[in-house]
Length: 238
Image (cartoon, rainbow, N blue to C red; front, side, top):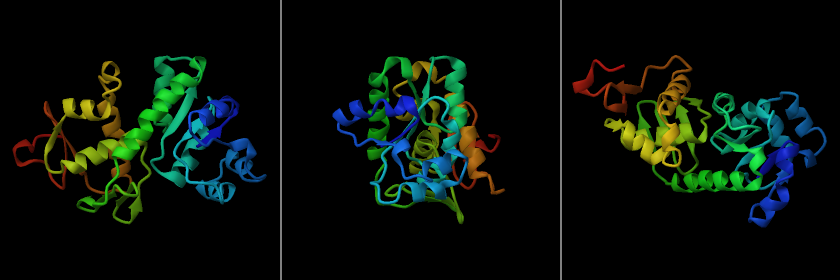
């Protein structure tokens, strides 16, 4: 587990007691983390972390969001938890737009982080499998969490990945908002009024980034459908 920034590294003793193997970014070989901190691509992480175990998650201190793009490039859908100073709507929105999967509230100490961390790691384990899921030129391999659109690899956040996995498992069917909320946001039902639309928009942007045709369709008043075409009875959907 990689800890980035002072606040995150202070949690190392508690994480170790809880059974995790924390790795402080400040202890990486000279030229590794410093190079990445300057905005280098994910390849810098490869050199900085050569010989280290596979990471389960990354815990980032407040203000470390500039590292997220490189971390995504290197590890794809690995859970990234970004620290925030105050639990406000603005800081929650910043967490989502930065590309992190979730936030942890620094003022609550390790307890808040450990709860959220266990949730994300359990979801990761439930997402395993050997089959290849495919719609058109979109492919998802649950065993390795690899997602491709044609020859283009997609770097998804944990919840973007979970949403896509759910829709792929029900490809060609309309998946209701209620089912999505139950299966993906069951821990935060009261704050999920617009979260589905937000993540559908994020997912569409990544699926269509290379100019590809739309696969993720909105069925008004019912939910969402992943397929090469809209369900025949819902051609008026977006």
